[in-house]
View 1 (cartoon, rainbow, N blue to C red):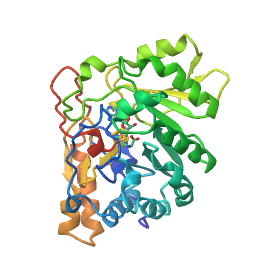
View 2 (cartoon, rainbow, N blue to C red; view 1 turned 180 degrees about the vertical axis):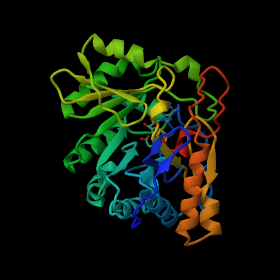
View 3 (spheres, rainbow, N blue to C red; view 1 turned 60 degrees about the horizontal axis):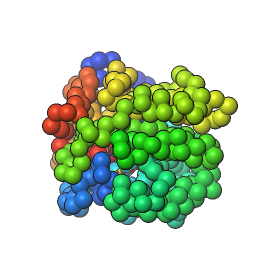
View 4 (cartoon, protein in one colour; view 1 turned 45 degrees about the vertical axis):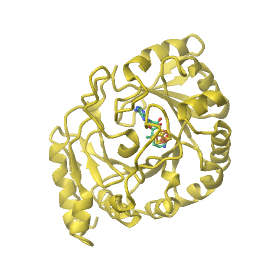
Length: 334
Ligand code: SAM
Ligand code: SF4
């Protein structure tokens, strides 16, 4: 931005939006039970943004003051050209943090390229350390491949790698201490996530699987001393440190702790919808803007600025009600 009065994104509630999450594909090589149905129909290629379109949107957001971009999906690394896109995004002037969330399945072969592309940090999902359970929870995944991926990311020099664990009652809730032990041993951070009701999934009862963060914390406190920190990403995580170690333990608790007042983020879905809130359907169709005004960043910019007027005040999740959000997390970009 060469303007002397750079525009920034501020919503009706005075919140500054400086963080964009981009889902670059709704496809995935896993079928995690809380995220997808076993049989999924993915979007046809023509309906998802091209890499060039994604780059254009990112560029405009950075001009509008966005400092952090997270690339996610689906599994971002199954999209051909993902690493090249990251390389281009990594060079955007004004962007301080380019980060990615991945299931780790492709890291063994891509970690070094990602580092070189300018990716600053990785969040890697890992729900269990038991190979059978891993295959059960992802329906198809291979734990050892992911563990090798985590090692490859460490070897490539990524610092502050964060493990993301969705905790489900009677599936993996008994592993939270082991997972913290895994993180401690490798100098990783770890966040425990309460499941969010995104998309209908036939064979999975979300209310039944709900395991609140406070229970996870109580389980951990039997083994580890958790020291509260003031660290924040402006999002739903609350962080603790393990006494005497660098490892941070985060809790992402959309149900038990509301985090909306400090929300600083919006999301771009794989099909080019700008979602103003994870827990609401308020959105703007940026693909339509891109395709009806090709090569016109000003119109795109105006649409993005105007979208701030419909960012809702808070999410409306309710595990016991029927989902009001019909898109899966893989479409939204977790
Ligand atoms: N495929 C990549 C991965 O798994 O890390 C990136 C996309 S995935 C949708 C991003 C994160 O969302 C993962 O950590 C995953 O565990 C989490 N997630 C998926 N569905 C969820 C749900 N219904 N509630 C809470 N977290 C969910
Ligand atoms: Fe794929 Fe990630 Fe969803 Fe699992 S959580 S199915 S790895 S997108």
